[in-house]
Amino acid sequence: MSDFLSMSGYGAYVWGSYGLTLAVIGALTWWTLAGRRGARERLARIQAQTAEDSRSPHDSLPRGDAPRSDETGYTL
Amino acid sequence: MLSYFANPERFDRLARTLIPWGWGLTLALLAVGLPWALAVSPPDYQQSESVRIMYVHVPAAWLGLFAYGALGVSSFVFFVWRHNLADLAARAIAPFGAAFTALCLVTGALWGKPTWGAWWVWDARLTSMLVLLLLYLGYMALRAALEDERLAARSGAILAMAGLVNLPIIKFSVDWWNTLHQPASVFRFDGPTIHASKLWPLGVMALALTILFGVLVLTRMRTLLLEKRADALERARERRLEAEAREASQ
Image (cartoon, rainbow over all chains, first blue to last red; front, side, top):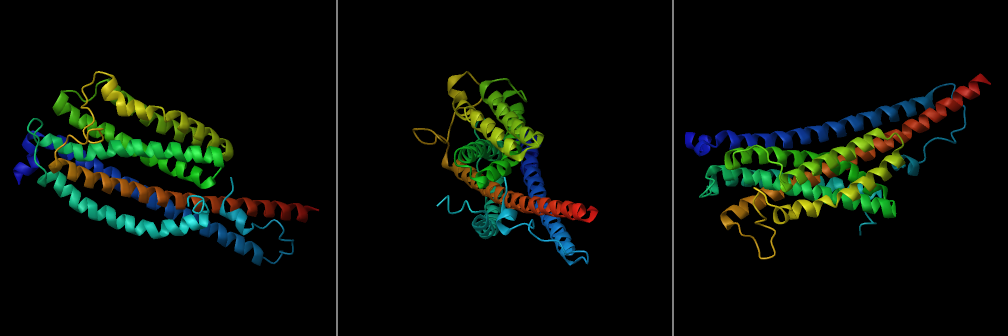
């Protein structure tokens, strides 16, 4: 076992490389999933606000500029 | 077929199906590849156990190059055909490509120190890999700096395409210039010169990281699509509130 860990004296380099690789993989995965969660929450918040707007009592304006579905999908 | 999936909703459905399979495959391949690379594969007769660094260093290098190729191709498709999804792919790819290129440089230093006696040398291979990292960082900085999304997308695409010239320089740097770095031993015209006992675990590790890269990019693209929808809704809401305010003040 200690042979395996020492890697014939190259332990620091070998384990350092693998540790770093796993750390990078873990960090990228975390960043990606956290970003997705953040975007979901933001979209839900804005959708809730939009729905709230249309329920409010002073709401008698034409809805001409409400987003059409093709507009919300992608604009650039 | 590509234009079929250029529709954001179809893309989203396809990505949603592929992503769980990708995670599963990544984990399975890592579960096989890591013990194979660290314990089962034989030590090198010259480099002893330090050769095991290859199984993470080389896949990271390939991914850094592959990702840049994908960034360049996506940018080209966006630039010529104005497929917005291609621009989204380019944006999604860049940070992961940068991360794997950086990982390649650092694991390379960790391999270089015991093997060459130096963490870093300014030779053609190492320098052109550093340029690759700078291209990724420049691309991301440029896109982040430009407020106008259209302009950011177009100038980013031009920068990404121009940077493609660096890829053959990296690939052939070990042939064109004197270097400490070893020459190609896998992708050669006369076939791999690396023994099967090392080629197989290298292949498994490379496949694991490539599929992981694909999963991360697809997930990131879905996130960027959500952000686009949120942006559009927010803009529409602001327009409406402004209109209401104008109406009320009259």
